[in-house]
Image 1 (cartoon, helix red, strand yellow):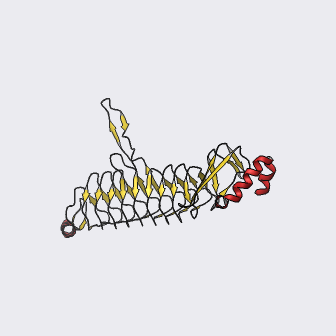
Image 2 (tube, one colour):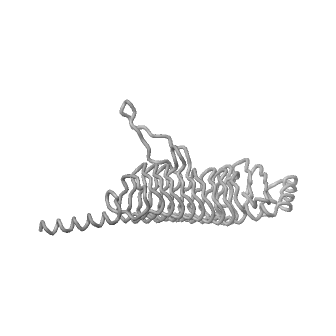
Image 3 (tube, helix red, strand yellow):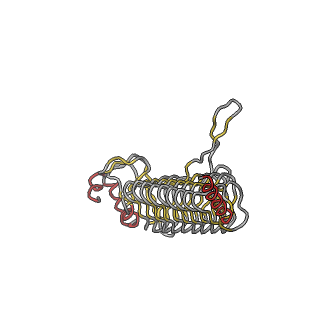
Length: 301
């Protein structure tokens, strides 16, 4: 790499680059410099353990063209914008893209095919799998985001105007994810419209879960596979939702509630306990409903 740069630049530029390499060993380890560019400027922040590089022209590498403002991240080979703040220990795999002003903490791992959107913040020791999309969000420490997850896209909000036209409601807020949150493969979490969508600390979410806009989920909750939560729902702490359970929009569920699989919450749950059925009722009542239905069917036959 040094030999290539030595041939390309004049003696004056060569001297300045030599000074950069001698005085900025931290940058040289982290950024794979483009093979040709008009001008480069570097800066490092040793207190934050981060590195950034600014590119003022389109740059070409041996592997192809990198868009203006983007460079290869040495630790993994991913593509990172010059304004992104990335800890030196972060791994951005080849094929991943980190956009402008994103912040990646220490020991963050970003898998191939993942896109980290502008101004996204990812806390230390968080691991993000393959083909993940994160935008309009902040993610806490020690989270696990599995393959195919989408976080921060627009929620499903529309209304009909006085002329009968279907119009989209603005979706302009964010998603806030706490610490030690696990999110299963192909789960979708929408950004807020009138309040941020929030997932609090230590909540665990299974695969194929849909969380609508403006939803607030408390700490230490368990959401099993194919759960669907409509917009503007508020869920307390230590709530467990069985597989394929559903919660209608604008419903509140207090802390320490367990919902049986295939159940549907259609109104507020204001007392802790176990619930089941459609609509969801206290579990003992639901069991009685099942028994009565079975007896009725036997009498008919």
